[in-house]
Structure formats: C-alpha cells, structure tokens
Image 1 (cartoon, one colour):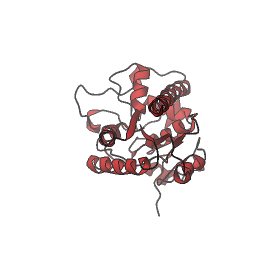
Image 2 (cartoon, helix red, strand yellow):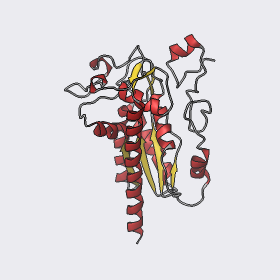
Image 3 (cartoon, helix red, strand yellow):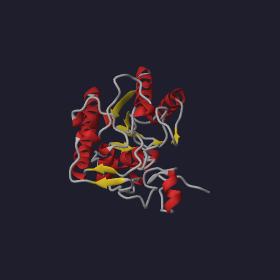
Image 4 (cartoon, one colour):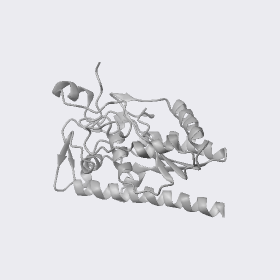
Length: 269
C-alpha cells in the first residue's frame, strides 16, 4: 500500500524511498517527524474530562501541492504552532483537522467541497460545544478560511461562543505586506525551517520581499493566476524570520484565548 507523505511530495517520496509521515495524521501519532511532540494528554482531556472546558482550540489545515515543500506543510506548521502555545488548564487543543477545502490549487490535493466542509465544521462545532464552553477555530490553510468563517457565524447565530483565528493573515500583517500571497514561498519555507523541517528548503542568511508571491489585483485567485506557486527548486528560507513570525502568531493566538477567558469570567459574574 502506498502511503502519501507529509514530509515531501508524493513523487519525491517514491523516488528517494525516504521515510515519511502518514497522510492520515493527528498530533502525537507522527513520532518520527522533525519537531513533532506527543500531545495526546491535551486532546485526551477533551475526550475524557467530565468538567466543561473553557476553550477548545480546533486547528484546521490542508493536504495540497506545495511543489518541493511538504504536501502537508500547513498541517506540520499547525502542529508546530500548537506545540509552542503555553495555555492555562482550562484550554485544550483538539486534534488538527488535516483535510479542508483547497479548490484554488492544482496538482495533488485532498479537497472537500466548501458546502460540505461548512456543514462538517458546524457539526463538529455542535458536538464540541455540547459539553464545553467555547470553540476557537485556528485556521492554518488560507483556502479554508472563508468556509470556516461561515461555519463559525452559523454556530454563533445559534447562540454558541465561537471564535476564529487566521494564522496566515496574522503572518501577512506581521510582514506589513497587504498583497502578500503566502504559499510555498520563502515565508512558508522559513516557518517550516523554524519548526525543524528541511524538505525542499534552502537555508539562506538573508531573504528579501522579492521571494514572496503577490496576490493578483482581483479576487478570487486560483493557482494559474500566481506564477511559480509550486516551486521545483529548493526554496530560500530564514530561520530567524520563521521564528519571529511563529512567535508573533502564537502570541496573538494566546492573546485571543486570554480575551475569550476574560469574556467568560465577566459574563459569569
């Protein structure tokens, strides 16, 4: 049975015979991936705890074409970012959802139709919120953001406490580039490098903004609108930049969690 890799493209794994993480992945099960950690205790608490949890963070990622970078780059970054979060006891991280909607991409992808994905997230949310106080969707794949936004709005309209965090939007704002389109470029490669992943990455002392894809002056875009979106050569990356962007994003996510807990405390008084 062929197993598609997270740590490389499907074709490169077959050529090299390198060990690969399972495509069917959840945090704590990818023991030999660089930077992976065991997080079963965080999500087993979600499954077994009798007390209501203050906030459940539900990461959302994707499996899609990243050229020479990992197929599961978004998933690997999601797990990396979650592993760096320092959270209070009343907050739990659920297993990352690996598949989402990736209609904008060509080549290999595991993509769910937007309408199906919205309904899926609504049902996941209803299940989680039936015994917990709040749900925070943490989106690590830009193509899944709008569907997740709709699902969160539907759940909020039903009276539930649901919030949304967009990792790549946070990174774009940290760069100060409104038209940046981050996918399989030096920015994503830098974050992967900071997380310990080197597949398709070429470490460089410096990188500049010329290596960042720019969004076309119209929406919505698809892959054919962005030349070079699936690189064939190793992508330049800066470890310090990746570390800085990860730190910025996780600090903002932690701040949002703190705000949610403060709202809960205020409403209970």
